Image 1 (cartoon, rainbow, N blue to C red):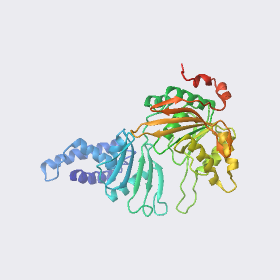
Image 2 (cartoon, helix red, strand yellow):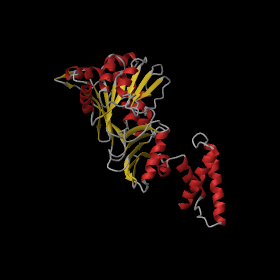
Image 3 (spheres, rainbow, N blue to C red):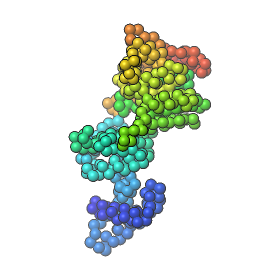
Image 4 (cartoon, one colour):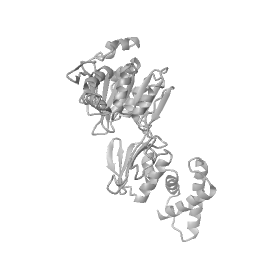
Length: 409
């Protein structure tokens, strides 16, 4: 591909001289690339220049290098690839349909740094010795995470979680086999009724997608306020106010943590509050909001519904020594209504493994839960429990007994 590398230098110089912006002037840059490839092909036939084996392939390679993400662009274009990560320039991995694989792509250290710089350009965020971690969102909605030395041994670690839209609604989750129709109808009704829902699961379990689909059931007249580390939620709602955290400046000032966003959200006339993920003390502020009667949802890393509830009882203790389990445990029992636990199976399928209810009781610092749906084999089946707040379902126009009947009509 020496011919393509030579041509790339020529094209970049032409773009610089013409004053074109590859992002804003895409049609003009595409014409320039096409003309440059044609001109090079003509010159190579009559001179001693390296030939281009395939003009279309050369044009795409040039375009990927100039406006795309170079050797990684093929994975951005592949709808089956969900995540891309770089451990070393010679070790580029992808997750294809949920299954990880090592690719044949080989990069250089310079290419990795150039790609990261290009990805961060549109986000306004930075990565350097003073800030060796960075989270950012790419223009297509993909999430970028980078770690650099001396936090790492010598290589830059790059993770790109693509924004792959496979589900926008509960019906889509049923189609994909993540949920059964009965479980989906129940969750839709629970959202409309205003129950507080905790979405739990491990990394890549589909928590954000599930949260998006749940949020799609929020009644149209309600105002939704979202708080995230970086923008990931895509809620199809007409009244959404979305906020994300901010990194500190070079002087170490100006940081906006998630906890601050949750507090500010309460001043924005929310009908619902949705937190992308709770990890630390912001869980206390969310619990206080939910306990005040504001419906909400969030995600949390946990291996089961029981562990998710236990973690929600533990994280608020990080808010300070004056916060005790005596306050937090009954608050969790009174504030969290449902826990939906999702998982990534070995074959790459994403499933809901259980849906549990929190009836509102706690004894000896243990919150009681009741199983509503559990997975037996490959089937999500009805269990024996019932959710709290049956009156809310009734006021929203739902027959709770019919929704949870073992043989729904």
